[in-house]
Length: 468
Image (cartoon, rainbow, N blue to C red; front, side, top):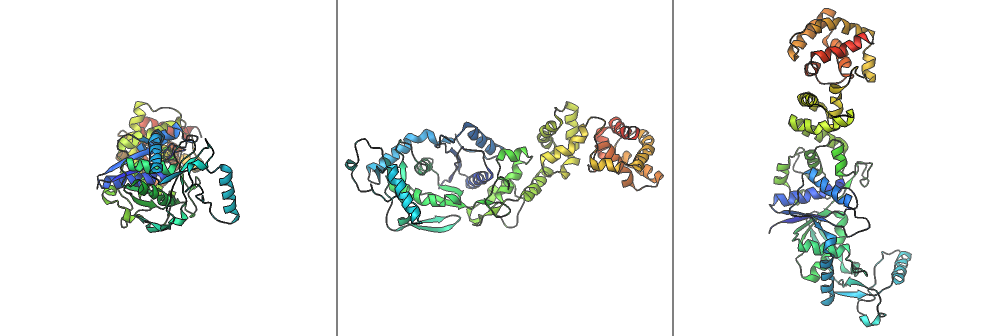
């Protein structure tokens, strides 16, 4: 059997983190089996579906590196096919026209509420002829659900799940305006697209029993189901924006790498032994549904930051500099010229071990492009007291005499200055760091001074010494 999966979001908002994980699991399962991964946009809710949301979904999937096979399917464009199936079920006696009025349905709902029971349509038009209805009366088409027996699903994640047919009512397939319901459209599309495995959130598990009714009534093969637990926040509550339930584009804008997001989302509910760092190639090789847990996973920003920091350190300097540049430019409020772009690239080896996001990386790089005099942060200003400035005053002539302005020569000069002043090396380099970078934290100052060059480094030191 050739495996076919699909990701079928509704375009009513961004590609949230739960949807991104569902897409990833479908993509990995298809790639693992050498199968096909489809994208379907379920845009039948015309009032809430927007072009902007569709674009955000495409954008988010592309950023995550989850490419789909073939053209995306727009569900609304297939409405005629959905109606065709509803009419076929009607013609073969597996469905019927229901003329119940809204008032009747409201009364049934009120009665169920009063009795503390879930609302369930009572099938009052199930066996009545159309001739009983007033001429021209509006109707919906409902499926004839079995009244006896049970439906069993061998879920690939949840295990065997059973529901009694008596708990299922005759759901609507086609509304009175001729538009298909979600339940009908999903089944028809999955069948026509040849979907073999439906991997989705376990909030859809109850839908599966009703959807199976349509498969069976049409004589179609029922696909395998795999309902994955939802993602919760660190406190165990349903994931919300305060926990990190943001769109994929938000994580991109916060400076996360797509490979880190893929690794993190993979580990939200799936495991391969004790492995934490899992490359995409390994994920494709290892992924199976048997390793998906049944318990909800918890979203943890600290773990995401840790993973992202790992992948930042693994990235080559050229691609990392290219990714970081827009963040630097946004913070500076200007573009980087060609020389500054080269400087950013050369600074990457010293910057990337200290950052967990591209935003942090950009923030840590800003001092390289700061206008003079460099603005001192609170800690740097406090460090540059009278004694520290006196230390810098004595150090300046020695540094000005350094000819070979490179790491090793600068280190040798600094050791000589510290010895002459009776200082430990840190007592010299900390004021130099504060004066040159405006901060008390940075990569190695010998590396920083070499990258900035002699003229710029000395100018920044003179600003502090001569203009306290």
